[in-house]
Image (cartoon, rainbow, N blue to C red):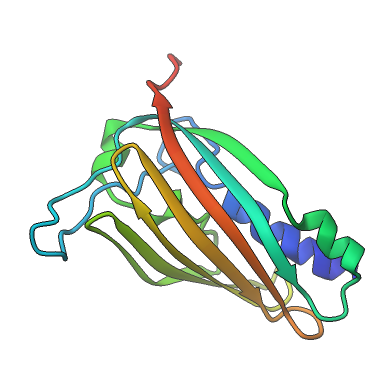
Length: 177
């Protein structure tokens, strides 16, 4: 039971930790701003550089065999972080702004175009049991984004599914370093 709960927490914390560095070095803090215009007439939309407030909330969790109390302790948790996106990062699109990618993870697809975000991230690591697949689907503008996220893992008996919501909004200029 502890292993399964820690897998859920690790998956969520991996998602919530993205962009928390705020140091402008581009490591885990990179912006996913530039869109290739795959929708005719949609134009290019970039995230505006500056200070962003990013919120993630677990909406539901399903894990066969896990006590309801353990699942309830994870559900409805919110994590709010602030991240500074430099103009250079905003000019170089990177899906890691929306999903913390670490070693053992790869994108099957990722697309930001015409105000729409979609992507799939798959992770397998010797450091944690099983594998995890995360799908993202949402919308964005220069000043905000909102998306639905679903994480599925095959760790433990029966696996686990976590549904969450992620959002972000520009709240001002980056603080002086």
